[in-house]
Length: 369
Image 1 (cartoon, rainbow, N blue to C red):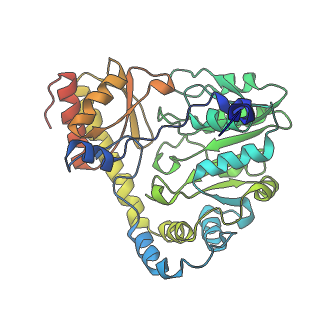
Image 2: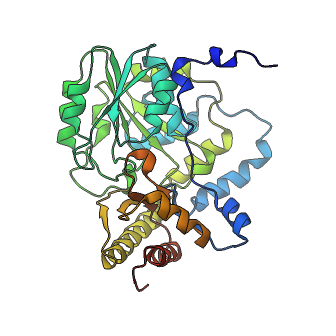
Image 3: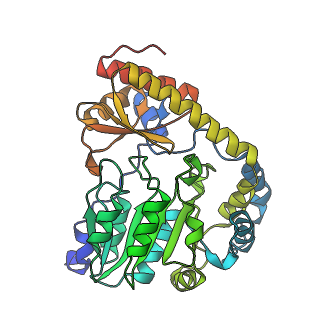
């Protein structure tokens, strides 16, 4: 029998609530006996992966008996060329989440603190506490990171600051001027992690070019899950000064990224047509959804990403639960501190139409689609 197992669990882990991913479409369809559900809950790419990535995967399937390249050499070389950095500035991870965890495991000691916004990606708090650290959540200014307040919240034992830019779940961003002011305010022995999972969707010229900070105490985390549509393969990367990366590689597990993910990501980098299609689909879909939300007298937070945070003027969990039986999966935002909001991914034309039509039915608001 298991005895006293609770006494073996670290104090930072005991109070954690596991991250809850969006409900899978297959599970919902099985429960309801339907085949036309739409999932607009997880900010996934509705177009699918790059065709070039799919072909590269097919060609590589016969070599699965071999271990992957533990250094991800080919991907690093191609990525370095694309970004204008050196391969030694890069670390590849099992999704950008692993990059965040590697930063904590490398640079955070027991009991030391990490600063982030209270309405930022919930994983920041989870990984901090799991690593034995202490999270400091800073109120946002409206729906955007208050970087001045974040700088003031840094304590003597703060080792890391997390800033999602653009932020999930609000879709807002901080300008280059704001980010640089935060970097300048960082004390010694404190690193800034800029989470840029949605960077490729941003069109605003005031968005910062974070790659120019590689001589500063900064790490940029990015992913192939969103624009490139490779969420199911779990592959992301970090960009930073070589000294920062070198110590992270001492902690990183060998063969942490599988061979198929490396091959697919390398191929996806060269698929400019797929990139254009995804960005244009998001642009058109965003305009359509906003137009219909306005027709229903609903408000939303301005977003530069591929999703919207929508005020449904009643408990978001209630709306989520009423949409589910109708085959529409969204994300209620109660756990993020926005109880009357839902987060909705911009999908294909068909997905957007179904979401808007069904939302109108649930809220009792007429809307033509």
